[in-house]
Image (cartoon, rainbow, N blue to C red):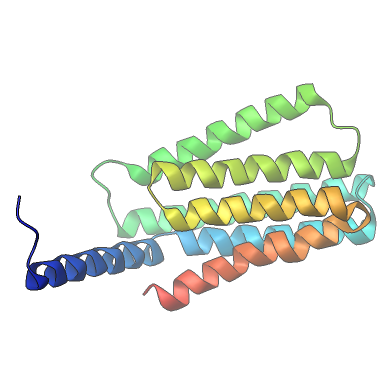
Length: 192
């Protein structure tokens, strides 16, 4: 096989750049940036509230229950609205929704049997499960961006828990929730 000519190599690189641009535009026009922002805000408010209320306070559980419910409703609303606008032949949106429902079910089962000893441990487990979901979603959809985001936030989670436990919730509010918000805004601003 002959080596490609400089012109053929240039055309191949242009095709790769165009494919990358189209993929990014599809992600930006899909729900990904909105879901990142929604859940970033939930984390910012939930972890921020947990820091000031106290991770083992019953009110923190209620705060999270309310915020998670609002996050789920907002996510379903965005998914439903986008689903009406864009129809996928392979049902990718419904498949992703089913994946996250299964994730919630199994994460809840594992946490129920693991019986975390503190609110911080519970937050750690839920956060790690969420990032496992991001990483596997990124792998399934071949999204380096989502996979990398999940791994980076996982490192933030572990560093906060292991190195800054008294400030873990505040750490997670800004570095966990903030990372998701910044990633969502970045995709909306630069990938369109």
